[in-house]
Image 1 (cartoon, rainbow, N blue to C red):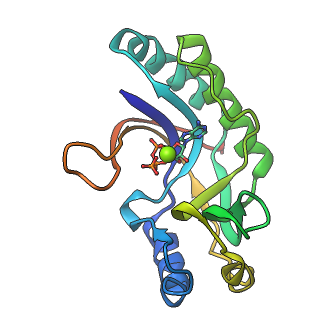
Image 2 (cartoon, rainbow, N blue to C red):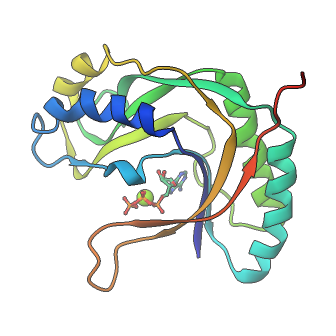
Length: 191
Ligand code: ATP
Ligand code: MG
């Protein structure tokens, strides 16, 4: 099964994002905007994992998550992969707030995956982002970058890390399908 570890922004933040991008959806033909139920922040991509590896993975991810504090995060701005946006395949919004904590958590979940024997991640550097839209062919998303630069969501506290199974389009299905398998709490602040 194909697995990744992710944070899921809360409903009110997704509402803000949807409201903001609604008038932008028609600007670049060919861009496929992600359905709101599928919006997520990938912490680590674990790739194809068999049942035995999954058994080793679950306790490791639980421990990794429990070693990290809850994160204060917000979404803001926009960018593209690849960088300049003239030949983009992905349009994203960025993550702000506790970016150092976010990077640390991402690294820990990736390490948990490696120790459990998941295939090595092909993307070495963690670039925190939330994918808004994709295109099969490279498209010029530069007309969206200026309007996206004025987007900023309310902050939220990320308290839960999710392990998600991804089913890529196959057998007549045209869209990717994500199934949450497990979730673990981040450390609550001591009072
Ligand atoms: P599709 O591939 O059909 O466009 P998707 O990218 O949403 O759909 P997956 O490819 O399973 O579905 O990816 C799940 C998550 O993991 C996404 O956030 C994706 O960006 C990320 N991801 C996928 N492959 C990699 C990779 N090699 N390195 C890092 N992150 C990845
Ligand atoms: Mg993909």
